[in-house]
Length: 193
Image (cartoon, rainbow, N blue to C red; front, side):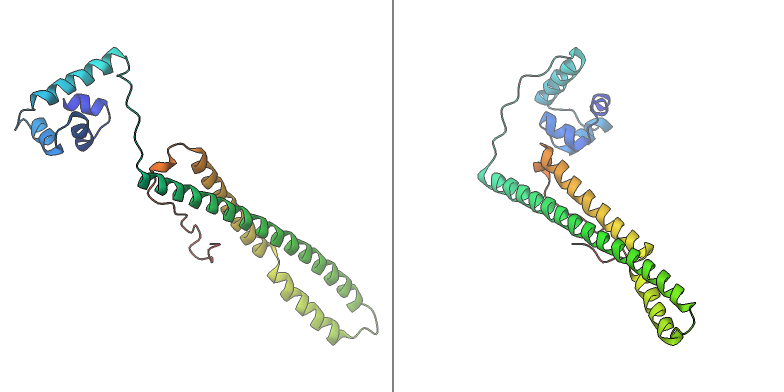
């Protein structure tokens, strides 16, 4: 019996439920401390015969879903749709922010280049130009490649969350979930949600 249980890739508890006995009985039986009830032996033989004959068992009766289970499934579906939409909106907003950041970065680089050319001309107000250049450098830090990389990462996370929600909505077994959570993937960055 232990060989059959392992062949089916079942735990003692799962196998016990399948043949209608407690998992303690299975454990005691596998140790040789107890005999299985006759009904359980019949079920094991039937399972073994079906497994080795390759023939499917009788069709199962449709599972009846209780009203409470239907409400839970509807609530989970709504949560998934909400998470999908939220991730989609977040990704769109972050993409807009990234585009604006990249444009600002290009504008500041052009401005810096022009001011550096002006700084080389005679009669230019050096202290004023230097102050403007320092401010440009500070502004470039806020929209440089490090800041852009953070936004790109956040966009990827939002898109992954959207894809996960879509996959769950498309998967017929998602109703088996008890809860839906999207843990924060970045320990040091502020979470999107």
